[in-house]
Length: 253
Image 1 (cartoon, rainbow, N blue to C red):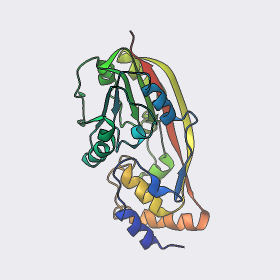
Image 2 (image 1 turned 90 degrees about the vertical axis):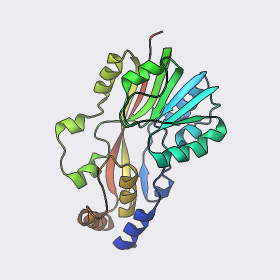
Image 3 (image 1 turned 90 degrees about the horizontal axis):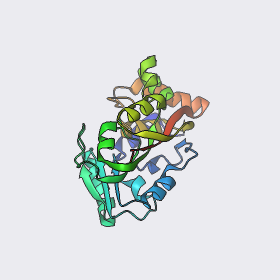
Image 4 (image 1 turned 45 degrees about the vertical axis):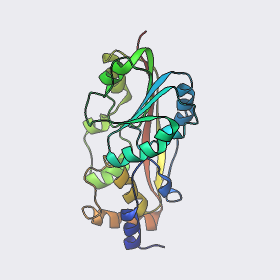
């Protein structure tokens, strides 16, 4: 049985760059969606001449797609530590890694890409996605769905209003994609069990996925974290549910 102070110290010092969550092995679990996004991503990449991966993080998902990249393969990222990590991982494989701003536009001309992809974008820029796709091109992505891990979020922030629970709803995303001139041809939504086995796993997760509890620090939430440590120790893992949406949309030819 490890102490609260030891778990906190370890989680606060762990590096959080990129989208490799292997630090959580044995400390947290998350059920995976049934569709297998990374496998499908590899299949899509094999059939195009030019592709763009938005918000690639540290490039781990794209690199692990086990695909032969198309002649033009571009990845974007906005957070400097992730950008550096993605460049080191992807550039040796011929991928152009480009800095992306925090707001539109994307730094590309119109109708450049046959395929635009993204795994867990913060907020899809539908108009820009449509603009950079060639006629007949496809947007293929896995989004974070509505109220993802809100059991954990609300443990720290308290109850959130109905509007916040509605954010990222598949119906709203479909409407936004269609308003940008895309036709949604596939959309699937699943809620998936998450378990956190110690408070250090929670701290690491919230340090890495910074938008879940904005401004999260151990010092700010020390009392709640200590209560959570006691709860996990006495009752077992903290359970939440991730929300994931598979999206495939096409630009008319």
